[in-house]
Length: 124
Image (cartoon, rainbow, N blue to C red; front, side, top):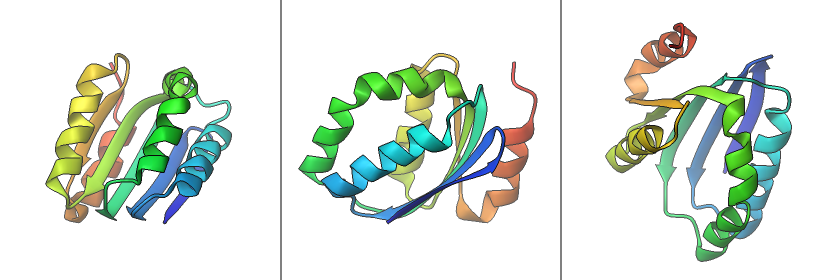
């Protein structure tokens, strides 16, 4: 289950949960590319709940689309990841350390207001 919605000219909100299958991953990546069209250093509020490891087919789809995903990176500047799952929080922040120009910070679900405030802070 996922939802991607453009909330402002430079802001996306993404919700994701459950187990992604290959078709889900394909639709998710298509929607991400479409909804982020024209964004530069955009903000993403990413709400993740009860996410399971994606299926092998979903991982293959993501790996095949990796060059396109890397091309999307300049569209984003800050991503706030809201999840109660520690492994997602840690993986998200590690990803932020590895991707230059992209700040990723994890938040607990009770800290949604802090996540939204962090997104709007001036980026350095």
